[in-house]
Amino acid sequence: MIDLRLLREDPDRVRASQRARGEDVDIVDALLSADERRRSSSVRFDELRSEQKSLGKLIPKATGDEKAELLKKAGELSAAVKAADAEQDEAAAEAQRLLLRIGNIVHPDIPRGGEDDFVVLETVGTPRDFAAEGFEPKDHLELGQTLGAIDVERGAKVSGSRFYYLTGVGALLELALVNAAIAQATAAGFTPMLTPALVKPRAMEGTGFLGQAAQDVYHLEKDDFYLVGTSEVPLAAYHMDEILDAEQLPLRYAGFSPCFRREAGTYGKDTRGIFRVHQFDKVEMFSYIAPEEAEAEHARLLEWEKQWLTSLELPFQVIDTATGDLGSSASRKFDCEAWIPTQGKYRELTSTSNCDEFQARRLSVRMREGKNVRPLATLNGTLCAVPRTIVALLENHQQADGSVRVPEVLRPYLGGREVLEPTAK
Image 1 (cartoon, rainbow, N blue to C red):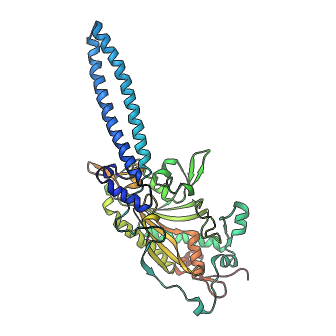
Image 2 (image 1 turned 60 degrees about the vertical axis):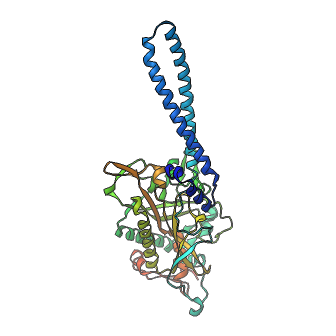
Image 3 (image 1 turned 45 degrees about the vertical axis):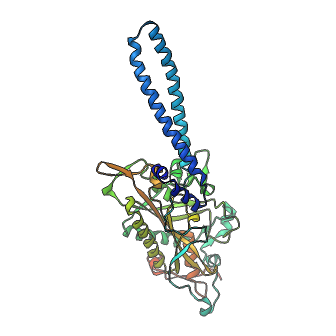
């Protein structure tokens, strides 16, 4: 959540951020009003309690009519204190409810607009010219079926649309990707983590996934658990309600987990193959760091993502996403989009977000410097979202006979295999 002091001191900045996100601007004034009610009712409560305590000291010393009058007044004060306490709680609850609906303050340098208003920051590598090579590229599903690697028909039979099996070399390819990604992250100083796939409501709400993203979250109502859409959630909540010493920072974790997404707003979009699915595995980077170091850490996370995609020999572009395409927790987000030959365009493979103090305030994760305790910053970055990476690998490294060349970085994790060979013609 945002700092309430910022809201009081510079409400126009918060309004501008909400407007840039395409979110409700009026909520800022509603929150200011609720915050004022909370503070004034708190002052009123304290004044009444003080008067009540002073009166309580007089009653034992009083006699007769004076005592009766004081007792009457004490009863009235008791009722007033209870009413003020209730008003204080109500105002605080309303302020908290509204505060949770306001997104992080957007970074001043990012482009304004919606999903298509991003700015390309860099292009790495050159897409292959398949026409010059003399053959028409196949899409990832056709390749995956030829390799005996992907089975969407049985995935649909067993679980429904947007589910799939990775079989044979497809399963081995996922394991190779995960192991190679974890190896890179470990070499960069990240602690590998296997995280829970089910979390409590506070963990999901604290990371900002029960606001604008709530429609894509799976909820197990009977047990009141949520299935995570990314290991960012359990990694962000890992240090919930803790105070970390500044000397410990930065703390960097690389989480591997299954991810579950309803994809509620994507009806009819990317329905072929495994590009957009309900369940997938992912390696996610997560950092806890001092707020003043957050922008530099964001740049580092992006560099680690670029290192990974470069090692996979994929052509890609880096974009600065626009304000209307940010998650509620992020102040800035960079995406790396790989070239998908059969789509003739770049598609998102990795994403890294700077959440500043937003998640830490919601989850009560703080840092201690001497006697000073304050919220720290959190950042996240996809290293490898497995299905989309397989899509990009198969299409970009396919050969005319339907085989697929294995990038050198993955070969040690595939028994030295240099090429994935078709199992069926």
